[in-house]
Amino acid sequence: MSNKRNRWLTGLVMAIGVLAFVGFSIILPFSGAFQQSQKPAGSATPSPRPSGSPSADLEAQAKGYELVLQREPDNQTALRGLVETRIQQGKLEELLPPLQKLADLNPDQPDYTVLLAQTKQRLGDREAAAELYRSTLAKHPGNINALKGLSDLLIEQDRPEAAIGLLQDTIKTADEANKAQPGSVDVVPVQLLLGEVYARQDRFEEAMAIYDQAAQVNQQDFRPILGKALVLKAQGKTEEAKPLFTSAAALAPAQFKDQINKLAALPSPSPAPASPAAESSPAAEAEPAPAEPAPAEPAPQP
Image (cartoon, rainbow, N blue to C red; front, side):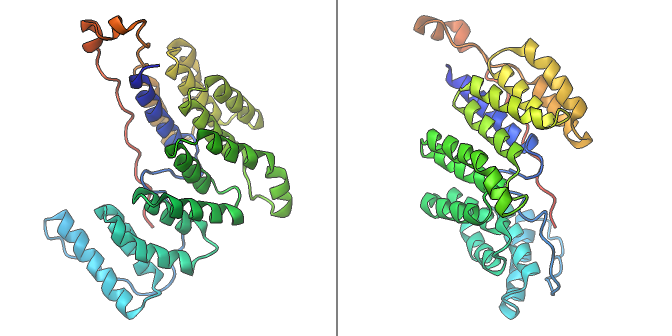
C-alpha cells in the first residue's frame, strides 16, 4: 500500500474525528474543552485596544489576564481567558500553569484534565499525558475525548493493538459501567472511534463491521454511514461510496452537510504500483499528490 494512500487515509480519519463524532470536539491540537464550561462570576481584564499587530494584541491580552490573576489567583474567568490566549499564541509551555490550575479547581470537569493531557502530549511528555488520560477514564470511563487522546497516543507509540484493546474493553464493559453510573458510556461514539483506529491500520473489513454495528442503534444516525463511505473511498471504491455520502449528507444536521460534501469530492487515493519499475516511471513521478482535507473549524469560545 502506497505512502500516498496512507497519508490520504490519515487525513480522512482526522476528518471523521472532526465531523463524524458529533458530541465532542477533536480540534487538533486541542479539544473544544471550553464549550460546555460555565463562566463563574468574577472580574476579568478588558479587551486590549487594537494595536494593528495580532501577536501584540494577544500578548497584551495575556498580560491583562495575568494582572487579574496576581490579585485573584483562583479567578476562573481570567484563567480560561489566559488559556485561550496562550493556545492562540501557540505558547504551550506557558499554557501549562493556568491549565493545571483550572484542572485542580474543577476536579469533576474532565475536559480540563484532557486538555492538559493533550498539551503535555504535544510537548512530548507522553508518560504524563497517558497518566492524565487514564486518571480521567478511571472516573469517567466513557469520556470520548480521553479515549480519543489515549488511543492516539498509543498509536503514536506504535501500539495499535493496545489502542484497539482499550476501545474494545470500553465497549464490553459499557453495560456494567452504566449500571454503576447511568449514562457514563455512550457506546456508539466508542464504536465510531474504534472504526477510525481500524481504518488507520488498513483493517477495512473490521472498520466496516463496527460501523454496521453502530448503525443498528439508530438508522437515522449519519455518522456510521459517513464512516463507511470514507472507508470505501480509501479503498478506491468511489462508486460504492457515493450513495453513502449522499445518505450521510441527507441525514446530517445542516452545519455538517457542506463538510460531508467536501469529503465526498476529495480525489480517491491512487492505487499502489504493480512493480518497483512502475513506481519509478515518469507517469508515477508526474502523479499529483492527493488533496488534503479542509482544516477543522475552531470550536466556539466561551
